[in-house]
Length: 442
Image (cartoon, rainbow, N blue to C red; front, side, top):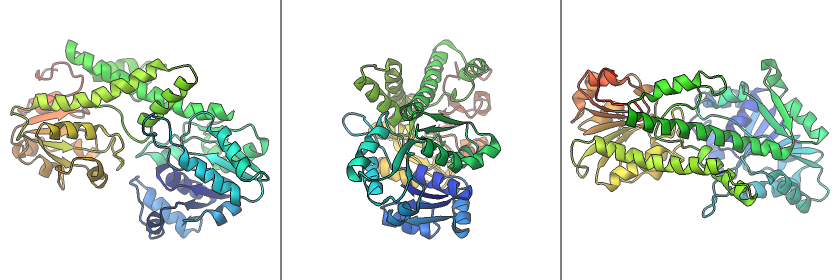
């Protein structure tokens, strides 16, 4: 099957590459000439474990190629995916659909024969209907079916998620489109992946509802962590206790500095706006977004409170900048708020992240000092803060760490170290929801 993937961002590049690995011929298209030139040289513009090898293998096999013009690829394609960005619109929080609409107009002008146009981008409810109107306006005679097929990829585990998904959601009531989409995803039948066909509006809502619910779980356990700190509980044991309930599950019950990334912040906001316009506000999700932003600000204060010296003139080492490990994505990362709050108080910030420093330079204050490793970052610092739980930070030599720090103070915002391991070595320890951390017997 011939597939055109418009957009070579995270979703487009991963999805297009995985479809080509299924045996389909995929052309990934992007107007960014520099990005396409890099891809044609074998350079991957995002960090995703295993993606470089998968791209190389399918390019060499002739199943995957890249282009800046969509005309030829769309003419030949049976399926055309729209996987362009839908960032939150400034001012009102709605998803900015200008790139999606523009892609639909271009597709309509050049598509030949029956073509299935699929929204892979995360879009609000009703977008598929809008695209149908746009396409009919641009090309009244075009034989096109618009389908919703939201993505559920986790950054850092996207290839596994694509090839072994919890579910594939396809929104269409067109029998011809359903047949095409079933054929496209047929390779997943070997893994018995559940493929859920539903009405298009329902499919669009499933994506937003899923992300909003997961964001809600994160916010819930973060509030439980705050309560644990007040009453002397241990949030990790609380999470295990409630996560063993099969109706709840253990995923997304890990307390931390707040959620970030490319999905949860903008998707919860877009769902809120959609619900408000429909006259059915989602008060719980509105509260989730407020609590999450408040939490990010509170993490900076937590670090300042841990310092044994005045903030102005102090040095803080920050390990981990991306919103989660195994990605270079800095979008809405808690590190942005934490670092900014420290810099605003006169703190010198040293930082290290295994993959995210290039992107971090674009969003963090210019005064941040970037280092080549964890111990170099900690050198001479008055406090070490773990913001992102990269594997490289899970087994630090604590004795070496103590020897390079000016003051043996650790703020572990991901709870990756048992308090006793640090306290028994003479560290001053602060974690998340760990009751009374000064007690080595916790």
